[in-house]
Every structure is written in structure tokens, then in C-alpha cells.
Length: 270
Image (tube, rainbow, N blue to C red):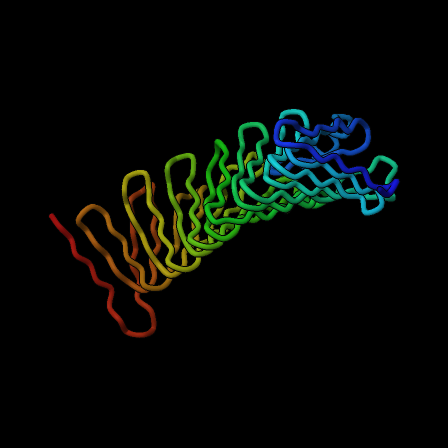
């Protein structure tokens, strides 16, 4: 065995566990930009039920079998976890982490689940793969069949993108669906705006349903602009047009035609 590689193989009745004190540091997913600094002195533990390998030449930790990486109140679990670090750094700071198979990432009161997750620590960005990818927090939930991507744009704004039959459920019960759903969040992870493309739908807590080819939603004004094959359903009333401006809080809907000459229509039930 290479002096630069340490491998622990275990039978199913034992668990490998290494406490990496002052060797690695791990920033967290779905967190504040300062968390990487906050956790520098907190040790990281890596556990697995089958094998645990540390390749010092490549700068890679590989945990296989019910693998778990924990640091403070944060944890990442999966069938296999691969963590890479900078071999040129004396502190061996982690640069990226990939987990596959039944992935569950927890931090505080937020949870991400999927089949695979890849996280880049410097940019705090991660890609979560489906099917059935889901990220939940007290401020909202994003689901998608293909992928969910999270990025930190700056200290005041984050972006979450769901692709493949995606849906965002807000804390107020509002649902925005589409083949691609992009949610822009503030520093507290509250929604500012949502953009949806492809078979889009917005459902309000009052049961108003609006569908279109594309829609833009602004949380501050509770307004949605819809484009292409618009249909608005409010109980037994149905409105159709090429474009629409909907102010949900005021219950005002404006249907507009386009340059094709196709008329705006409505079926109103007393």
C-alpha cells in the first residue's frame, strides 16, 4: 500500500470513522457567505459502513456505504461521498464535495434530497440531481425531476433553478410551476421574483390558477405577467388571451391580445 494512501475496509457489522481535526474545513451548502469562516475551526467527521479511503497524493477522501460527513449542525449523507481538498494548502481545505445515492443534506432547518449533489465550496454553488430532487426551507420549497442548482450571486441575493417539471412552493402556499423555474431570493431566502418557462402555472392560496407559456412573478407586488396561450381560471370563470397582467392581491386580471388579431375571450359565470 502506498504511504500516501490510507484505506480502511470493513465488514457490514462495523463502521469506519475518522475525526479530521485541523486537517480539513468545510463550508456549507445553502448557507451564509460567512459560514466558511465560521466553521474553519470546527472538525469534520467522515463515516462509512464499507470503506473509507484517504488519498494524500490526489487530495481525496472517499467514503463508501451509508457515508456521512458532519460538521457542527450540518451533515451530508449518501451511498458514496467524495471530498477533494487543496494539496498545496497546509490546512487541507476542502474545495468540493460530491455525494451520490440517496443524498440527504441538512443544515439548520433546511434539507436537500436527491440522487446526487456536487458542491463547490469557494462559490457556495451546488447542483442537486433528480429524479425527485427537492430542497426545503421554512421560506419555500423547490422540486424538480432533473436538477436543482443553487448559487450565491452576492451578499444580498441567491438564485435557485429547478429544471424538469419544476415547482416552487412559497411559504404563503403559492405555487409556481414550469419546465424551468428560476427563483431569486433575498439574504433571508425569501422570494423576490420567480421566472418560469414551459407549461407554466401559478396557483394562489385562494385557488386562482393562471397558465401560460412563460411567466414572471414579483413577490413585493404580488403580480404576475404571463405570455403565450394565457388562461386564467377563477372558480367557474375562465379568461383566455395572448398576454395577461394579474395582480393577485387585488384580484385584478388584464387580458391582452397580440398582433395576430386573435381576440381575448372570457366565460363568466354569475
